[in-house]
Length: 388
Ligand SMILES: [Zn+2]
Image (cartoon, rainbow, N blue to C red; front, side):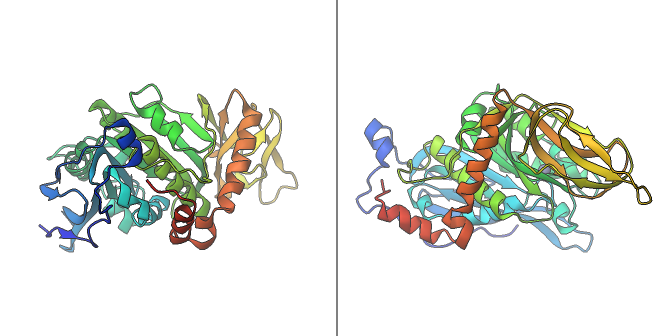
């Protein structure tokens, strides 16, 4: 078993030992004891990175799941942020990499548990799946003696997930598709709606729970989980990443793990889609999308065209109902029946379109987006007196 190693200095703490402002006002801030996870113990105010032995490749190379725990001084929720349950989905890995460098974590209340790559097998083979061709997100909670997927799921679920009180699971669309940044959440589950709305992006898809998914199985043991879906598999998308970092920080503020930010922030009014459906290709050929991601389309509007190589005609694809485009197929080679667009229905569809546009331009102006550094915005926070 790989030895646990502390990383970096102890978290900077207020030398007076003062409690976070909001909690102090309420008189609820309490120093917390050590945090135990996977046989390790992390003291308050410390970070610990360790590798969880997961499996061996058939080269006999060990395959270890990297975990980082940031244990704040003050009692609060234990938030898991995980990515790479589908091994080819990369945006979440970068979201976690940026998240762990935020200096506001010095003021953390509760505990942050970060797992950037859950499905290491899939990550190595640039695939969504495990070597047994199973989907890890249909294999929870897993079993000790089951398939490769069941064993991987069991290790992650038992050693990591079950130690947490809340979770944000980071995803992208499946390969060759691109998702508009969106939250997927079962809003009727305890604790889920506050996290989903707290993430602060324009689109929430109120989606049911698929059997043996992380959302479903963690929910059964009382852990609310939301999934953030943004961008494409095997690609890094800067806006999706920035929106993701912002969103997780917003969730942490919602859970009172971080102090509320008084200065300008990128936070959208969320709208809930209660129904979505796929538009499938009526023909074979080369597909050209004409409706962009996030577009508001009316029934009958042109979504795109499909053309056969020797045909002079374009088959025009008309929107079957009014909605917002939340996913587009990016592979032009399509067969009849292939999913081309995912459309979401909203009550106030025009408002959603406006919110998506303003969130999008807010991200483009975000210092994180331009310079890919968290230091400047942290300095900006400090200059604006955003301290507890
Ligand atoms: Zn996924």
